[in-house]
Image (tube, rainbow, N blue to C red; front, side):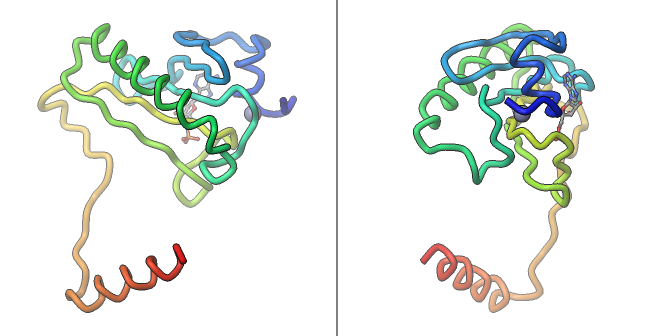
Length: 138
Ligand code: AMP
Ligand code: ZN
């Protein structure tokens, strides 16, 4: 646990939160500034900074938590949709450096636009980038 991490302190109960889930290595609570009411954060109890530090063997517990909390958030808020999001690193808007998943309940026509999409210059640019990413995967 990191003393200067707000989510570690929430998991430890040192800072109050609107807790909704606590099973195994995973904890969830309501985001204090919701995009839509019921917006929840699912976090590993241990301090990992981003997606890239998360141990693979936490994957099963995380998936169960995301599905369980996501379903419950939808039921409790009457939402008919749900966004799952994760910000990694400052450039992507990560403010809290303890890996976390956002579960955002959605309602038909709520007008939320989470990101703006663009076009590639041409097919060649897109194919080259796919090739570069395949090479990076190795
Ligand atoms: P991110 O930009 O992905 O790092 O998101 C951090 C999220 O944590 C934001 O949506 C904040 O509203 C939320 N947050 C920060 N402090 C607290 C807190 N004490 N309790 C609940 N949510 C928090
Ligand atoms: Zn932490």
